[in-house]
Image 1 (cartoon, rainbow, N blue to C red):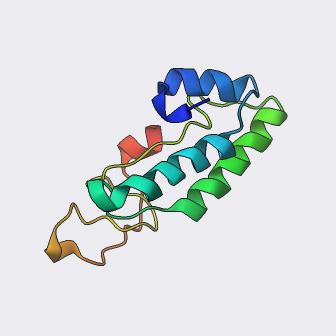
Image 2: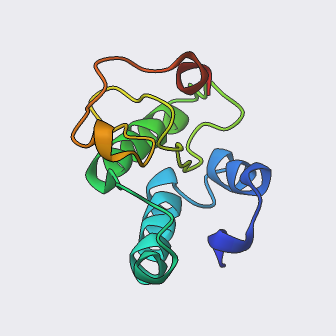
Length: 111
């Protein structure tokens, strides 16, 4: 099954029904980024280890029946203009090079 071609809703259904783990889905997208981003240049940074850790946490919650969101476990990418705690947020601007946000944007928090 090629998770890359599915919608977020389809991926969520697979994860919540335990046909696919969040970790498997996350690894599929990280592999895709690794294979294509040198040509595409869509990502300024990728927090792969953090994504895998979060996916594992979601998988544990799902196993316990503690799904807390319709999109729980679905890998997402956050555009570099939205602050994420502890991650680079540069808006692709040289003036913000090296800036690491101490907080999370409201839009990111709600997502």
